[in-house]
Image (cartoon, rainbow, N blue to C red; front, side, top):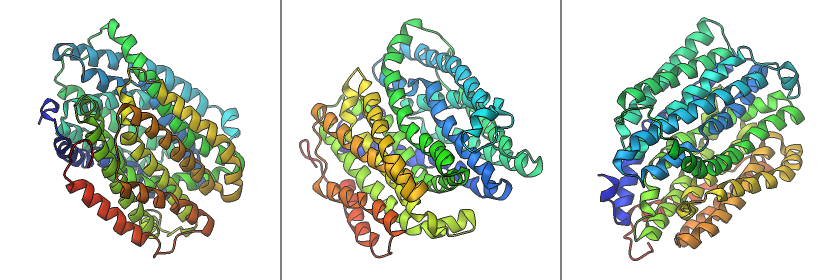
Amino acid sequence: MNTADLYSPEDFRHALYRDFGGYLVSIGLLALGNLLLLPLMITALSPEEIGLYSLVEAGATPGLTLSLLGLKFAYLYHHARQPESARPALLGTVLLVALASGIVTGSLLALFYGSAKAMALFDAAPLDSAWLLLPLMLSGAVQTLLITELRAERRVALAGFLAVGNLAVWLLASCVLVLWAGLGLPGLLIGQTCGQTLAALIGLAGIRRRPLFAWDGAQVQPLLRYGIPLMAGLLLRYSLDSLSRFLLAAWVGIEAAADYLIAARIAVLFDALLALPFFMAWGGLVHHALQRSRAAAIIGLVSNLSIAAGGLLYLLLVLLQPWLFLLFTGEKRLDLAPLFAALLLSQYLILIKSPLGAGLLRLPDTTWAAQNNLLALALYVPLAWPLMQLSGAGGAALAIAVVNLITGLILYLQGRKLCPQQPAVGAWILLALLVLLAPFALWHGGLPLWLPLPLLLLAGWEMWQSGHARVTGDGV
């Protein structure tokens, strides 16, 4: 079904289910790459090297965001509003701008991580072959934008093929280069670059729009005007995680950054199984939903679904924590249970921010995103120091969760003025109870088994209600 054929809330709910299912076996699978490499890292790398990789990852993620300049958001916005004839030049323009930006960003990252003086500040050695960050940024930028084109066109099958090919090459190349060639951390970077490059080549071959690298200079200013504030907002959001890793390395030690990476890698299950497929599916639908007459009902329904489904997965992963750590690290690591719960809470809050604040996407001016995340950074700084001193990596993760909660509520209140959605009362109750779990786990060193079980029932009930409720008027 084309987006032009979607009218009612039920239409969008069914379209969201279909697209989510497709992205779950593609983008979700790709996200598992970091998790599947965790046993290799623990086997082949020292704690100091894992800590360095944590810092590299902390720079590479916002680095890729900076390279993209918010073009993936701008592309979806303009794609939904431009005629078919203008779209080839739109795609070509975003690809060329991102390539130029990626060269600059990758070069700066290589200089930083290759500097012994800079790395010494964070209790780490310089990165061997830091120049590898340049091709990593370029291949990542092209791959991301081509997948964005597939999202806009709802070509889920090709997106899945890209993801599977990327993951297979990434895992195989990393294992060969780390275990057989003994390249260590640089081998992981080369493996990831190989996977992204293959995905980019497949995507280029499968894109319908020709010519691929058409240029329309008149498109650049509107694209950047819309995209850069969203890029700045996303960059500031990622900066909380990145800053936590660097501060942990500087204030606590490089092994604390390693613990953070291990817990974060296993917490990526939340992203792989729910958050990333949801963002991919919803991102391709939300701009069309906001143009419908019953936009408030559509957005409210999706908000209910995200709160319930996210809560259900959050609780299941918290309960399974010891066995997940045993599977991927060889130890139950109960000492990392509070850190794990706090990381999951942050991911959950980021998930529900998207539909709760969706009304703001009606604005042509997107500076609200940067302002909201700048507020998050300002709130994080005074929270991080005392919480890190009290609970180390767990305190850092809890500080991020607190600021995501505050800024998420602000986004909801702002977005509600432009699209007056009404999430269900049960969804709000579930959210409030889930927010209390992570601090409880932190201060008590974990969670008793009986505590999440009643919440599981509530989350399941809300999930069933949201998935089967009949939508009337602008409410559910």
